[in-house]
Image 1: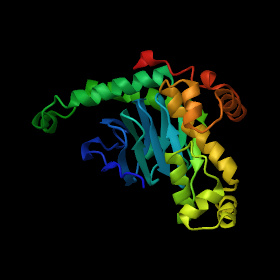
Image 2 (image 1 turned 120 degrees about the vertical axis):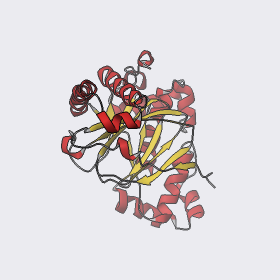
Image 3 (image 1 turned 180 degrees about the vertical axis):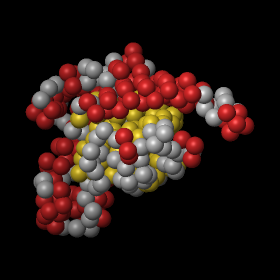
Image 4 (image 1 turned 90 degrees about the vertical axis):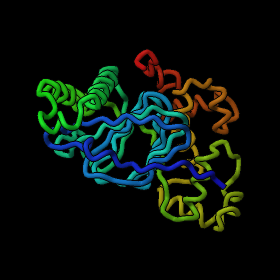
Amino acid sequence: MLQAPITHTGSPPANLSPTAGRPVRVVARNLEADELLRAHHHAWGQVTYALDGAVQVNANQQTWFVPPLRAIWIPPHVVHEVRTLERAQLRAIYVDSSVATISGNDCVVLEVSGLMRELVRTLTQLELSDDNLSPPAIATHGIPQSRLQRESHLAACLLDELAHAAPLPLNVPMPRDSRLLSLCEMLIADPASPLSLQDLSKQVGASERTLARLFQSEMQMSFGLWRQQMRLARAAPLIASGKPLSVVAAELGYASQSAFSAMFKKTFGQTPSSFFRTSERDFD
């Protein structure tokens, strides 16, 4: 039985919602491990970015595993929930739909450039500096024009970086069938589990044959391929957090580090160390 995480609402304060006049807003949120921003949606797009720690995002019958120093784009109106896999410093960048630079209704994990990191950092500092302005002063005089102009320039640069950010294949399809969903959630919680589909069928109340058919009909892949894809996506936060490849391989159920690295390279086209070479910690 999975332990229920601490839950929070995912809605921002009303004064931080993006508008046509201020289309990019940043909310800083520090969460402990295994906290949940429960399912919600909003009219604007969102980039969830972890300075450190890793998060799991569920939306559109998919699960994404987002390593530190990567980000995930969540389109407007898409119902989503965010769960921390470890203690995380989250930055939620809200983007008004009128200026969204990524089209479509699908979430996507993105590479975060050094410039993007610094833009987010500076915009966060600007948002925090607004806290020093008293409500009466804002009501009377508004936000200083020079401050708004600086925010506008930085926001335009950030949107351009988002438009050119490289996507990363770190998603895992999730089923609608409750029995299959229960099975998938068990394996995501324990990716090293050696249980076969026959073993798992006894725990979810469906025959092995039924589950195999559901994997094909709902996710267009076999159980074995789904588990492989899940393990590789789950590897990303573990590697990015600095764990040795031998430890990551063991935690994911691979017989050896070399077997894990070979499968990773076959899927992503490069070794794990090369894939995460861009995660320099000196930007933190």
